[in-house]
Length: 230
Image (cartoon, rainbow, N blue to C red):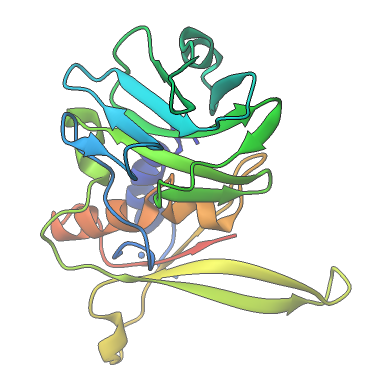
């Protein structure tokens, strides 16, 4: 979903012109650590965003013989981080260069095993599992930031899919600010389908579709709409 968030903003504007038929953060999603303000977790396991936008990854693994980090879709960043272990068994490594402004997903590799950063509670689910997230803040992420505007809601909906033999499926539905008050308003609907490896949860975590729509509606750039992510 590298550019999907920008595509979403454009799609939301285009959807109203194409059809007459448009979030508060999902429960439990905290704000990412701002640059220079520290990181997640305690002294033994944490992610630190440095003032120059380099990132230090740390994980406590006293018995491990090798540790690395895998940053989603960013092999060059992953290869630039060299981990060393201190006397307390904490492995740490810092990116070779400042990171561009955007959202990132990552996991650790500990002796070859994939290990989630359990000290970071900002995460995204996908078909490939759970990944922790962090944000390098800047002008390029302002459109998808949590702002002091009215916020809609994100609902997790479960259903049985008859065409797929009745298996249990789920989707996420964004409803705009004021929707819960009811009334005779008819809202257009924008349907979002994730890319390969993603799932419906991705649109409101790494994609921040709900915050993007909140901001667009507050700025008067789109009319309130319902968004269904599959």
